[in-house]
View 1 (tube, rainbow, N blue to C red):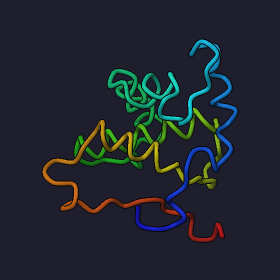
View 2 (cartoon, rainbow, N blue to C red):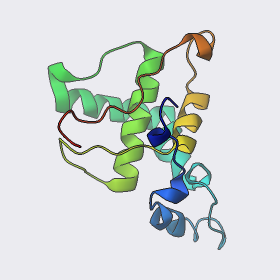
View 3 (cartoon, rainbow, N blue to C red):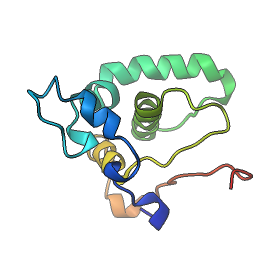
View 4 (spheres, one colour):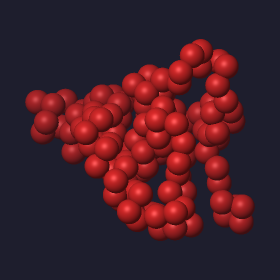
Length: 131
């Protein structure tokens, strides 16, 4: 990641509630990382789920919806899904940093075409007047 602010672990940002809710699905175990949570694959990595989420996103934002190559879309939408799953609806002007473990998981499932080191990722974009 490009900045120290983006290099945070899911354990550092209060996703413990999500980890606790996985206990029942994982025979009493609590995952050590959000990427091991059974919901991660279902909500953020399943292509069919992402296709539905993409349709909903396009409908909601119409002309302002993110447009780009498929490989970018399949990273953009999982990040949105992750935020919705972990924090619910944040509001138009509220942003959060997605933990590095989740970002790395999404990038591994939806890699860039060619070599990753030749690709520039945009990273977290805070609102201009948010801080």
